[in-house]
Amino acid sequence: MTGPEKPRQNTLYVSSLAKGLRILEVFSEERLELGLSEIARETGLDKSAAQRLVNTLHQLGYIDKNAETRRYRPALKYLDMAYAYLWSDNLVQLAMPRLIELSRQLQQTINLARPIEQHIMYVVRLPGYRTSYGASIIGRRVPALTASSGRVMLSRQDENTIRKCVNEWPLKQYTGTTTLDRQEILDSILLAREKGYCMSERQVLPDEINVAAPICTNDGKPVAAIHCSLPVIRWTQEKAEQEIVPHIVETARSISPPR
Amino acid sequence: MTGPEKPRQNTLYVSSLAKGLRILEVFSEERLELGLSEIARETGLDKSAAQRLVNTLHQLGYIDKNAETRRYRPALKYLDMAYAYLWSDNLVQLAMPRLIELSRQLQQTINLARPIEQHIMYVVRLPGYRTSYGASIIGRRVPALTASSGRVMLSRQDENTIRKCVNEWPLKQYTGTTTLDRQEILDSILLAREKGYCMSERQVLPDEINVAAPICTNDGKPVAAIHCSLPVIRWTQEKAEQEIVPHIVETARSISPPR
DNA sequence: TATACTGTATCATAATATAATACAAAATAT
DNA sequence: ATATTTTGTATTATATTATGATACAGTATA
Image (tube, rainbow over all chains, first blue to last red; front, side, top):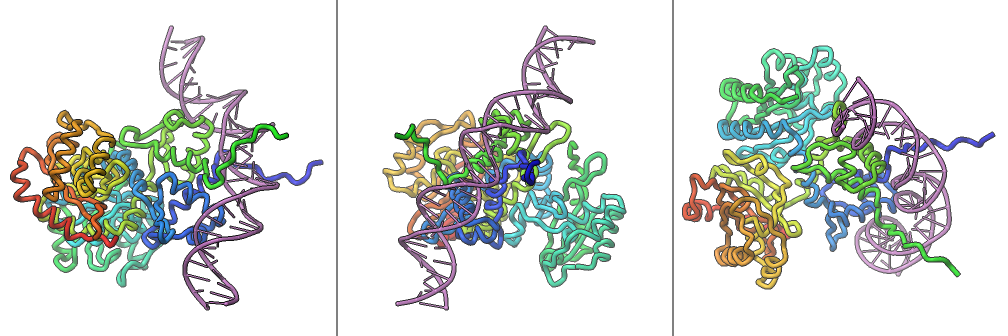
């Protein structure tokens, strides 16, 4: 009779790799530079594990160490990843010239967003005059329900799916006027469905009107959204509807992803 | 009497993490999508190791698997890295508004480059009209000696260092007119040193004039370069010298990194 | 000055990653 | 259409590696 069986090993999962990636992921908008103990704490890893993993990532050029403060920060090698991703995303390649043209034509901030889980992520950012730093860089994630890009992509799902997502997905309050009212969000999405675009105001940034139109595959699946931000100082929703919306919608429609 | 001693383990280096990162690094401009056997081959890893590591990266959301073709490609999570880097780079934050302003003023492609080993890497790309895709995305690396940004940063080193770098660093022929003549490159760098900016033509792309000016710390160390590309169809070096150079130089000078 | 915290280094050992292997499925060659 | 090769998937015995406990020097804080 055997003793208690030891839990079976998952031999298709490399836990040391996973731990190392947690180190890479610890850096963020709020955590620009960290010491070893902070890294251990923030990642939940043992101090020795953190030491080994950090040392490995530093030797491989992923993170830089400030010799004076002994703190680490992301190295340029992080951007190798962006480069690889951007080349592999056919849609971004397809869309880029149209987005550049649109940016020139409208003289405003133009972005391309992709859906990821319950968020959207900005994969192209063509900043306009006075675009904030956070709104000029790729990789930012925003809850799909809060962003006009997210809402407009959701609007192309069937109504049951829309309602389920609106009920369950997370919300985040960015500004004093960011809505947390799920009914209001549902109304916004259903209106977007009807009109073919979504317009919102002061949801993610406090002084912006946002217009977004979906990019769909041939079978109607939303895979991305084009998004334009306008300063409320010089724009109204009415003016945006007349002067911006047609161009956004037309550009989005002109981009037909292969699949 | 002991037998032959086994080699000492480097307990500060995690080789499984290093192998996993090799998988992440296998994707590139030339390798957008790969199957398991290709990944094993390109990374030099054993097939079983590749299987485990790929599976782990897939479970963690770093790579996507096309269920039909069973091939993998980078996932959006790659851009999380870019986001983290761009927040941690103080200079990029400092420079971004100036670059956006410059882009609007000149109506041309404006980039920011950082030195990395014997290359430069583009960390900000503000594309102008008709900028190619490869010239619109961050993360691209170019040999420092070939790029105007690289040359202009090198020009701010002492002459012995310049000569050593020119003799030893790699070159890459991008166009039919990319120079591989190291004396010509040295002359270009020394001229940049004298004039405070570098101008080159048809070195990385076949139809471009390039103007770059260095961004230096207070103690004179070059840490980045602002770079403008102009189509040769509508520009000459003389015209660029009069209408573009002063603005590039002035903007570069106005950005004083803290350290 | 005392104490707490951080970073660095070491090592015995348990757990994990390895690589060999088998086999089904798919692709390619004949 | 069939045979062969290649690819992808799954499993396992075992060697190697990663673990975490520990010690200690240096730094920061009380």
